[in-house]
Image (cartoon, rainbow, N blue to C red; front, side, top):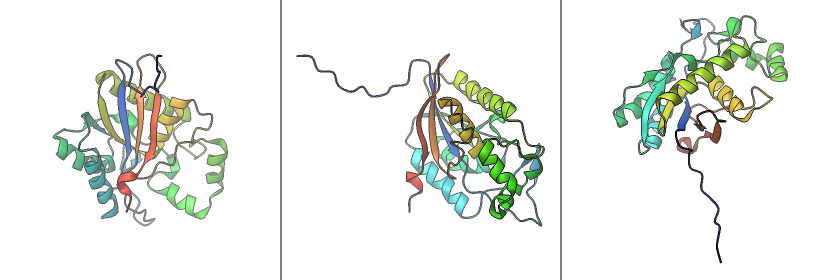
Length: 221
């Protein structure tokens, strides 16, 4: 009598597994000393020692993985977070500009943190409408969605049948996973923790597959 066991997931031929790793905790916002900007984006370094410890633990967690390439964004917190893993694997990180964080317009350089803590009315509107672009001057949702998709697809096209690590930002992870599952709530996955690992499989000419979200087992304790 034939038996049919449950089938374990295997990435389809030609697909790319992308580990979306949120950078470690960045430096605290000081209203008297706002973050420097890089191409209009706030560019704080990792917080010492917490963010640097996040980076170290990510490096330990992924050191045994078969990772073909490491990607970072133009912002220094992703470079610093990727550094321990890059050193362990002997890989030179590549910059994918399209995966930089969503631009928050008038709230760049740390304003979002301040206004969230103070209960600014626009924060409630962001949650209600599930869009960042209710902030004055913020990047339009459609433009952010398009460039995140472009960055993910460009990485996938360069690495068929491989696994890569992309050190990115919370907004980018949220946008990528929302795209993968067709979430009507655009910010449904926007709460990834610093140092967390999420995973998608990008299938050529097919839907993206979500394999995990906000994995923080390596940060426990």
